[in-house]
Image 1 (cartoon, rainbow, N blue to C red):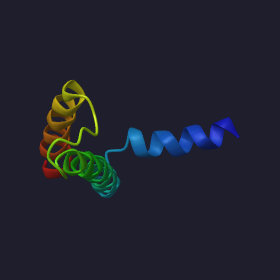
Image 2: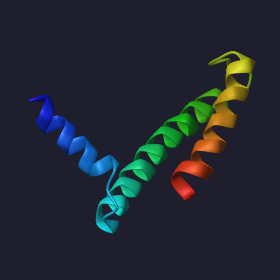
Image 3: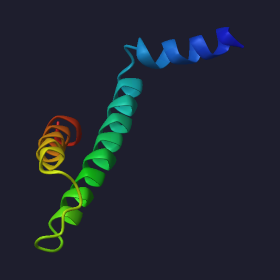
Length: 77
């Protein structure tokens, strides 16, 4: 059983086939888009109503930074 899963993983992770690489790139960018989008929803929840604190200010700053990095380097590129 371990041999089958190892062959499957090595086919995708060590492939030089352009179709496999394109599929991996598509899956990675979709996952980054979903993660960055969920961060955007948390940012919008924090800014929904003035004076309402959904999270600590330090966490909010980290969230904005992570959102920007993920969306630029994960979803756009």
